[in-house]
Length: 88
Image 1: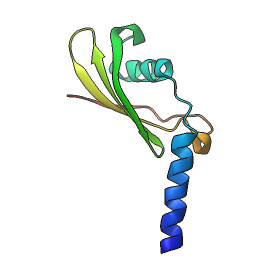
Image 2: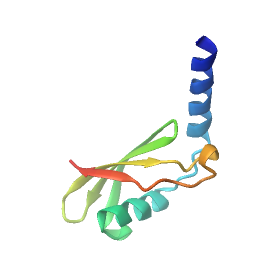
Image 3: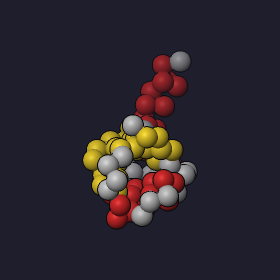
């Protein structure tokens, strides 16, 4: 059980350290999901944990969104799943 736990922890660390998502790519992908152009969004906060990148975005219309982008690392060969966003 300990070895499996260490293995998962090691994979998460590798995924975080090999994340290649740029702010521009995050804005492009989340904008598509939200129906907004990247120029209408501002990246307020960003953190990566394991294979997920969590972002807070503010739109020019004043709305704030919390989004999760899965992928963009060595394990996913840089590919991502569609972001999941919700209004705050």
